[in-house]
Image (tube, rainbow, N blue to C red):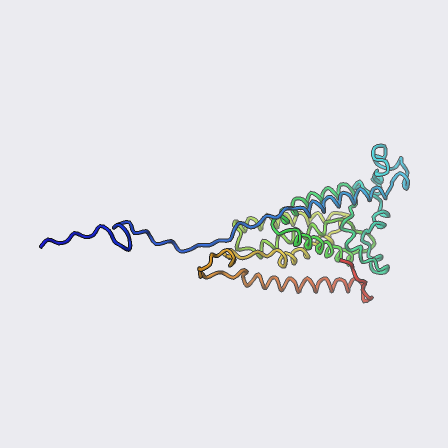
Length: 310
């Protein structure tokens, strides 16, 4: 009896040889990080420019110093600059800077004008000073705000400026201090700590780290020039460095949020952050609070500290 030929069709699997392959195991990855619209940094930029114009208006060099002594008085009138013998940076007089909120230790401690620890970061000694700081602000700040948003960058900027002013006041003798340098060095410090705490998500880590360290070193080296307040630079950098561990933490590489996993899938997920990120966060917060508290108490040297409005 002849054998029955095999059926060319499998009822469950369909025609022979057409069984579909097994589906690949599910693979999920987070969506592309959201890019924020940068508006706070340009606003800070505009505020600094307007504040400098107002400073020169209040300064009124022709009325206080004499029109013939002022620089570019024929073109700028009331907004003309003090003589080079008084201010080589093309700016106002020291008296005007003090009047508008320049940082002077005696006024902060003895007169209770703690607001100067924040107001000084919106003043600049001259056009050269202003241009250098504003270029740095745009170069560093816009990228940070696009990646982390205006809230975190705003806090980083203001608290770094406060930290720079605090250390500047502690080391001040008789000179006044103005400028956004402390806040800007805080942004640099934040970029460095952000690179370190989010180490797992970066490619070319060593090259990025060396480049950043070189930029920071060059900027700090400028602080050793005469009449430059390096205390504000160092204080701002250290504050920003610690704040970066607190404010600029990203999820570790390979982390997938539960909201991006379809229902019904049960996969093993990585924790949002690595253990060392949590440790750095807690350590940085403790050091920052202690540093601000210790510096404030030391500044007032045992006197009852005034409340600094923030």
